[in-house]
Image 1 (spheres, rainbow over the protein chains, first blue to last red):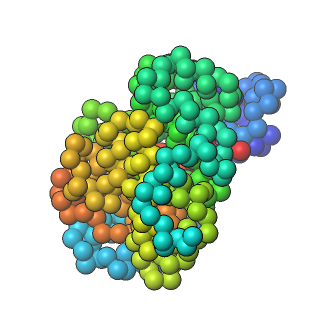
Image 2 (image 1 turned 30 degrees about the horizontal axis):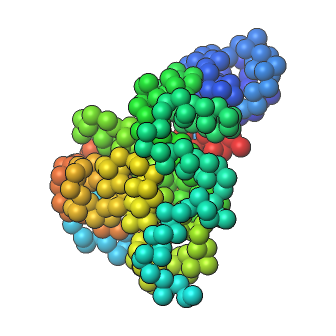
Length: 100
Length: 282
């Protein structure tokens, strides 16, 4: 879910988060497909960055993330339920790299 | 006076008179004057917040974020109080103000706290708890004692951080080598002094030892497991780089399977990304 400056936004991009003004009111709802007119108005309202669909920020290398995970669990992996938790987190992390 | 000679009573006195501490930022001082009053009304809170537009905007961003599940629909503080209740809004005001200082106090503590708020909410909903937002606030505030200790005793706290890294122990274990009590107790004093609900006081105090919780054992177990899970996932920095062992009875109480955990982690991952941006926009 990248956040990009409004001047990099192109028509057809879709909002993954609503655009709010300074007081938290919704200007454009989540899911809105941006048109040239909307982009122009966002500019005019002084909105600087918005969230659009697409690849999220790059993840650290998988091997490194998994190694850090083992280090965090080093002292406790034999304690009750800690292997269950570690396995769930490891599989979760692996799933973040699937299909990317 | 040397830190190791510090007495519990002295420490508690200092924490309870936090508004007189020179290191506490103005917003927290002013806020303590408001939430210290058990009979504080919605009007007073609205008035206080409306005099501080930056604070108001942060609170609204927070309630409109993924944590509270009202994306983009809450437009005023009084609306927030209607939907979330006075206690949650009081907690959020404190949370938001504390988050401001957190990043200066300890890099990564803010991410850890936001992560725990999200995790607590997700687990509470999964377990069908009636007020998931209140537990989420408890997750957000569970480490408030760390912030206060760092602000008031920066040198001593640096030593605790150093001990934790050097000896490979948890920050809570390292704290009691220097202070008479850990951040959990310190945080609970503050919550008590500020007339937060007893449940919140108990959760903060027992988040490492959820089996000691008397009035809200399930809620305390949720914040405890959230803390472990966020550490396990490596989100933020709570003062040390280790996962501490989960309380066996707390984990059994919640009866989360491995696939439950994966599902919770998945929701957390998405919510956190959208919530952290509340702060990265500055």
